[in-house]
Image 1 (cartoon, rainbow, N blue to C red):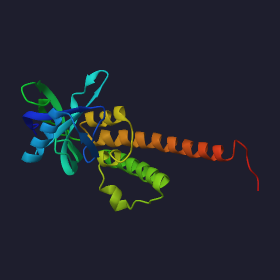
Image 2 (cartoon, rainbow, N blue to C red; image 1 turned 30 degrees about the horizontal axis):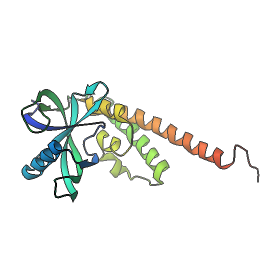
Image 3 (cartoon, one colour; image 1 turned 90 degrees about the vertical axis):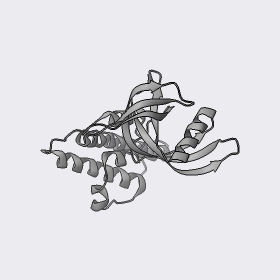
Length: 210
């Protein structure tokens, strides 16, 4: 399948990584981004978030749709809720529009080897269910887990920008599931460490009997 190409895709460089299915609230105040979001709303089109760090903007980003405008000022400033839809790659920057834009290609996954895919999925689902139960006391039903993609699980956990960019760069659901499982196991260990630290702090470092 050929990747879809768009010649004038609006780009919002930010210090964060968004994933497909992730909800991201944004405060729009710069004039060029007010213009950009206003056009996206008027034309019901997506824009893209790309992570920009000390090394510059990353090539792979996530397209976003505006799902709600929660506040709008007379001067065009607004608070919006956005949702990630699909990954893209920046092919070439555009500098002839009133806001940042680029030629982009929306990215399709390659074919996953089917031999151990189900095993990888189950490992990720088990780790996700364990983390959710530890963090919220909620037990997820098997049907609820089975419907989740790697992106959907990762979108609900704060892994940090570098880990999320790693997921966004992968063109294989199997590889994303494998990475998500690793990230979830690491998150479980951090949560367990924090819980032990809180218990120690509450006891002032003393072991209590009785």
